[in-house]
Image (cartoon, one colour):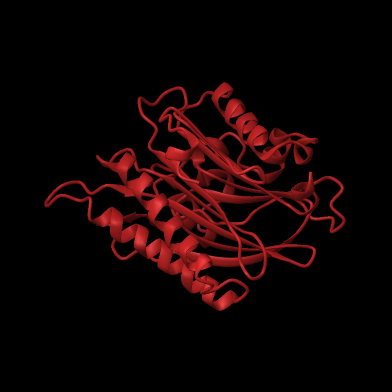
Length: 285
């Protein structure tokens, strides 16, 4: 679904596919919304496939609002076109290649926005391709930066899974934490701890996306979001609580609106973007 089809409001954008939805909000402190989201559902030989692309424009670089919007739209278009052509559904290796190609296309498009000798526009990106498998979904992820994907299983999920983060931040803090060179409780207080180390843009120094494929057994929620949301609910358990114990029974748009509202009420210090894709029993409401 394009922003035009949804009725574009730069301060509060809503995308509603019925069985998936997204909200992107300016927040309380920023003058513009430099986040962007693209959301699509396509039929394929393996069933309906959802595509979610969430981008967070780097506010310190001029033009990043356009960069995030362009990157999200281009990446989603590459993937939906490939699904429609039957190029990869049901083939994990080819889907992985399609995610890489989509991110590369988004990166090339952002790179073309850069003017000579100027501070190049830049954005983070998370791509999720969600295809049905027996008992749940297979999620193909690709990302650069600190936007995240979460899995929030329902309380009655028979697999007994716990909420978890499916991505790993590309930030100074995350690198120090991974190296275990500084105690975990001190990492976030480091100067520049939240500076991103990978992004899309002409000055990205050939940043490669990180990739992963996970199988999720429903019922539950796949949440893809920018740090404007997760900064307030970083722990998966906190985000699950914010979504609400009955969240799995609500419409995806209602859940996205609820999380956006809570982030704004908590301060809204950044732009807030969240995409919700229910998995399993939640899809058959």
